[in-house]
Length: 110
Image (tube, rainbow, N blue to C red; front, top):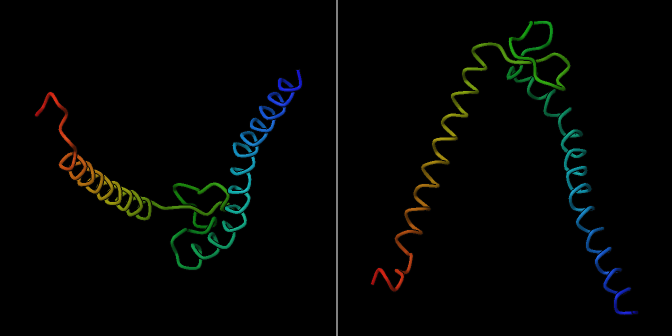
């Protein structure tokens, strides 16, 4: 009987840790990101990466008080995203090819 109660308590502790990880960690990450977003928004506006709200941007950025991107900045951003995506895809292909080359053949393949 006492062993069952100890099992229940350890199961409760496990679920409490899982709940803390699922809800606590994202909350901390979002909180720290939002505190850094104000500095990032100011930097982006100072360096003309984002257009101020008065310039009537084509794509307003959420949380930027109306600041956003015009067509040229949007095209540059999409192009940069495409290049990064292509580079990551090529790197993933190289890693996959390297792992496939190092794979030990199964008994059937020998």
